[in-house]
Image 1 (cartoon, one colour):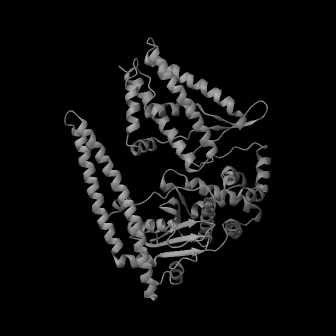
Image 2 (tube, one colour; image 1 turned 90 degrees about the horizontal axis):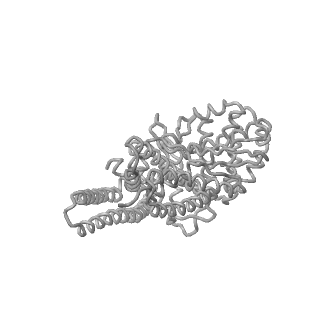
Length: 511
């Protein structure tokens, strides 16, 4: 099986959380990064690629994946979290077969009293061959888990394909004449189903292969720290600070480095492109060589404060940083975007010196827009294109320019929403969705108005409607100023084009 073939069975594990587990993961990543640098290990760390932490040493052709869990309750071999990790690790083991792999499950908690496997496994991990009885126990249990998760995944994918086939067959039955396009789609889906079933049989064979399973189970490592969830964060902070003291020539800069490096991990982890989510010794070396002002400019105080359970600790630990920032910037500090994906949050100052945060959509590269359209199977984009094609009174060049702008704004808006949900910025997400609901009401009213006004051309209506949305946004911003934020105009335009692509909004008359 090739890497591409295996990918279809693999779940997307590139999404960070926002609870204590999120904090635990970032602190563990920071500690690993510092220790690699201190010990001169030529290891590249990937954040949120294939698993929580991925480490590659290209010179030695080694790879190490780590799944990090911070829990208040004990875990056992039958926990869903462990089952999912096993399945993901097995696929990674096959995908990266050219590397010497290690697969680590690391957690703050302890092994459940009900567990009958992990403690024995840990006693001989990395050397299971020294106890044949325990090795066989580990292999049998691993096969059982992999089959269980695999069957669920396979059935889910088969069901999705069969549903698509059924839908198209139903359309064929209702059609008055032969539809070659539908026939081709059904043929393609039948082939897709056949490929899935063939790959499934191959993967099942690998799960049943004792040699593969013996090698795989021997590469799994368990780390149970047996520390309370809340206390584990305190322990990690102290370990990070101790590690920083080992690489810093000035103890007064420890807080600065802590904030700067943790912010850098966040910036990397939320990069759209996986290949940009890397941490290595060269990057750490450059950061250590930055001036204090440059380091402060790279500290995202917003993301640090959002770390659940860390707010008070960081306020205490960063008191000197906050004071220095205030002195150097005359008490006006520009927030670095809290998503790390270019959500620029600008401070707006009124005549009474009140500060407002601007909710602004991040920019998106053309290839990101095209990839987004591809992922949604072009369905909504085709509706948007159809509606622009029906606007009367525009030449082709103007129509294409408008469509290009609309496409970009729609996709940027939806990517923006994804980003907010991705980082669990509930407040921002809720406010933007409230505005979307208001825009939806305006869109519905506008469609009715166009229907009633037979004299208005669709092009004039389009321009008038955009102005109405701008006025609605101004009114909305007046209402939310009490919450210390305002919304950029592009957001409502993105919402408008989103409504058009969803179906009900149109700027043309139906004939």
